[in-house]
Image 1: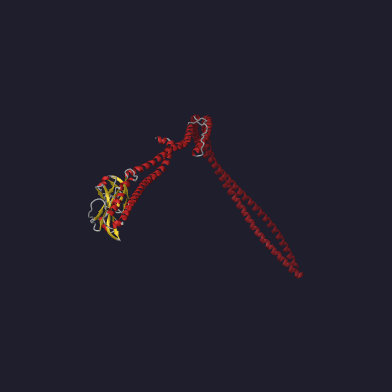
Image 2 (image 1 turned 90 degrees about the vertical axis):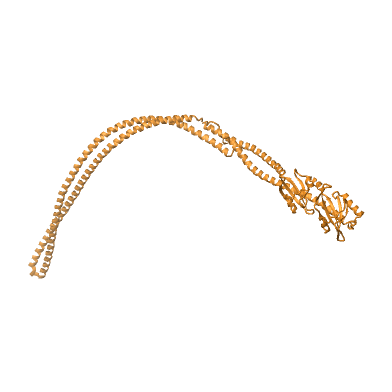
Length: 593
C-alpha cells in the first residue's frame, strides 16, 4: 500500500533495481570466475608442488643412482674381491650419506660377498638381483624396515668388468628423506602429500600408521590412475570426506605422487573470495541506495511542488504565484503547463463570473418578457376568436355570391349564343350578295367581250366598205352605227362593272366588318364567360380560403393557447435559469482570482 502511494520509494526501488541488476549479473559472472579460478589456482598450485616434489625426488634418486654407478665402476668393486679396500669404500659411502644405511655386493650367483651391515645371504630369488644381473638399473618394491621403522627400497646396479656383468651392487635407500622433503612444502589446511609404491602401498603419508602398515590404497581412483602412469586432477571420497587430489607418476622408481586437499577447504577459500565479491556488491548496493535517494529526491521534489500547486488550483486558489522549477526536462514542461493552465483557468473564471452576472440580468428580463408575452398571447387569442366569427360570415356570403355569379355566367353564355346566330345569318346574306355580284360581273364581262367582237366586226366592215368605194358607203354607215352602239354598250358595261366592283368591295367590307364584329362579339362573350367563370372560381376560392381561414383560425387559436403554455414554460425556464445563474455565481465565488 505504501509502495502505491510513494513515488519516491518507487523511484528508489527502480534506481536500485536498475543499478543492482547489472551488479548481480556482473557479480554472478565474477563469482563463477572466482570459483573456476580458485579451483584452477589450487589445481595449478597442487601441480606445481607436485612437480617440485617430483623434481626433488628425481634429483635425489638420480644423484644416488649416479653415486652408486661410480661406486660400481670402481676397480675395487669390479674385482669382486671382498677385501679391506672394498669394505672401506662401501662403509665410507654409508657413513657419508644418511639416505644409504646399507650396501651389499652380490656375485653372479646371487650370493652376497660383502655387506656393510648384517650377515651375508643368498638373494638370487630377489627381483632386484635378477634385473641387475641382466645389466639393468632397477629399484625394488618398497618394504617397511621393522628395525629402522622406515620404508626402504633397494637400488640394484650391475657391476661390469670389461663390458661383462660380473655382479650386482645393491644399495638400500632409507626413504625417511621423503618426510623431510614434504616438510619443505607449505601446505594449506588439510592439504598434504602422499606417495604410493607401484603396487599402491603407502610409502609416505602424514599419518605414520599408514606407512607402518603399508596401507593399500590401490582401490582409490587417483591411485589407480597413477599406477597406470597417468597424471591429472580428480575428486574422490576418502573415509567419507570429499577431497581433490593432483597426482603424477615417478616412472623411474614406479611410484605415484599425490597432493590432496579436502573439498571443504577449497569451498572455504572460494567462500572467502566470494564474500569479497558480496561485500563489494553490498557496498555498491549501499551506494546505489544513497544515489537513488538523492536522484529520487531530485525528481520527486519538483513533482511534489507541482502537486501542491495543482492542489491549490483544485481548491480554487488562483491568486498564488506561478510555479518556479528551474528545469528544462519533462517536469519543467509540466510546471510550465500548470502555470499556463492556472492563467487560462483564471481568465475563464473571470469571464465566467462576468457572464454569470449578465446571465442573471438576462434571465430576469426574460422572465418579465415571458410574462408580458403571456398577456399578449391571451389578448391575441381573444382577437383571433372574433376574427373567426367574421371569417365564418364572409365564408357564407362568398358562397351566396358564387351562386349568383354562376347564374350570370350562364346568362351571358346564352346571350352570346343568340348574338352569334344572328351575326352568322347576316354573314350568310352578305356572302350571298357577294356571290350574286360575282355572277353579274361574269355576265357583264361576257357582254363586254361581245361588244368588243361587234366593234371588231364593225371595224372590219368599215375596212371592206372603204375598199368597195361608193358601193359600200351604205354598209360603212351601218358599220359606223354598229360600232358606235358597241362602244356605248362597252361603256355602259364598264360602268356596270365599276358599280358591281363597288358593290363587291362594299360587300367585302361589310362582310369583313360583320366578321370582325362577330369575332369581337364572340371574344367579348368568351371574355365575359371566362371572367364570369374566373369570378366564380375566385369567389369559390374566397369561400374555400374563408373556410380554410376559419379552420386555420381554429389552429391559430389553438396555437395561441400553445403559445400561452410555451410562454408559461419560458417563464418557468427563465426562473430556473435565474436559480441556475445564482448557483453558478456561488460556484464561481469559490475561486479566488
